[in-house]
Every structure is written in structure tokens, then in C-alpha cells.
Length: 254
Image (cartoon, rainbow, N blue to C red):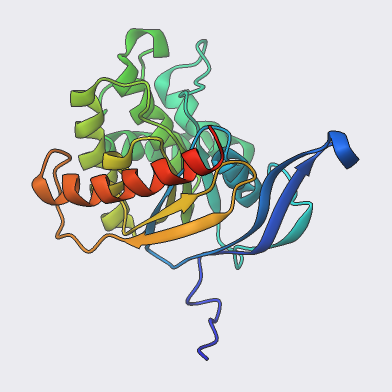
């Protein structure tokens, strides 16, 4: 049996459960979830609404604590990107990106220079003085991504970040995210309801059961990159995963 060391693991969940409330009125969101994400791996989480995907990300991010089980991040820095950009409307784009650095006491000149660098990475160079309301939805999500990158994270947690965008914008951001992930060697845990999106992006697609969430299947995605959402290969694997997801949903009567 091979023993994983901290160099082999970016995130590991060992028998993690999360119960909201107590006793008979309690809501069990996650039930003994065990999952390992390797350094540099892109893992997508799929499951029906309410299966605990977002809860799992919150636990890994340290925003909440598991009821039972352990979460190991081996000292790696974690950043989280939410469904909505959650930008402060009264701040400029640059100031939004600078927030984490400002909290750490980084000098003004340095954080402005680094914010400009991260905006260049997400192809928003020159937009630093704009306000969020002056940007499109896709551009605001790019700012949110730049803000997450500015935290110098090793692990990026993403909770349906592109779900509200049109298909073309989402496809372009898939390309941007994949480029940044590869260039920076990030580990990514990406929650989505879109099966093709999961296959398009992931090294693995992990399927959770309906509530309480459990890992019911782990699909490796052995398709050559770059991938296209509408390619026959992506569609074929997405169809297989969708059938398995449908079985799981029907099994729970939902």
C-alpha cells in the first residue's frame, strides 16, 4: 500500500461529515467524504442541487468546520472564488484586487504594481481605474479571479464561477482559466452543475450523491488538452457521467 506524503497531496479529506443543527432536526449535508487532490490537479465536483458541493468548498477554505473527519491542506495557501464576483462597487478594479495584499500590510506601491500584474494575467490590463459597474459580467469575474490569484494561493477553490455567464463568455473564460492553471501550477477544486464544463476543464470529475453528499464515483478525464466543450470526445464522456448522475438523482427520488 502506497503512503501519500505532504508533497503528494494538495488537499485531503478523511471521512468528513457536516451536520447542521442537532438530533432529529439536524440536516446532514456531507456524509463521510474522503477525497484527495494532488498538487497541480484540476478536480471538478458534480452533483444534484443541495448535495453539499459548496459546503465542501467552505470546509476546505476554513470558512466552516466539519462535524467529523479531518481536512488536510499541508500548509498550502487557499483562495476561494464564489458564484458572484462580490466586488466592492465603491472601489476601483485595482483596489478590489489589492484587498488581500492590503490586509497583509503590503506597501501601496508594491500592491498597485502587483494588482496591475494580475490584471494583465486575466487580460484586463488598463482597466484598473474602472469601477465594477463599468464592466461586463465576464470582466467582473476576471477581476474576481485576479483578486483570488493576488492571494498567492497554491489551491484555488471555485464555486460555480461561470454559471451566470452566456455560453460564449463562459467558453472564453474556460480558456483563460486553463491557461492560468497550467502556467501557475495551481491545484483547482471546481464546483459546477454543468457536466460538459466539468469534462472540458477537469483532470477528474468527482460525482457526489444527493444529500447527504457522498463520493459515489470518480471519473478520470483522459482527453487531450486543449478541449472544446462541443467536441465529440467531451460530449461522449459527459453523456456517460450524465447517465450516472441521473441514476443517482432518481435513486433518491429527486
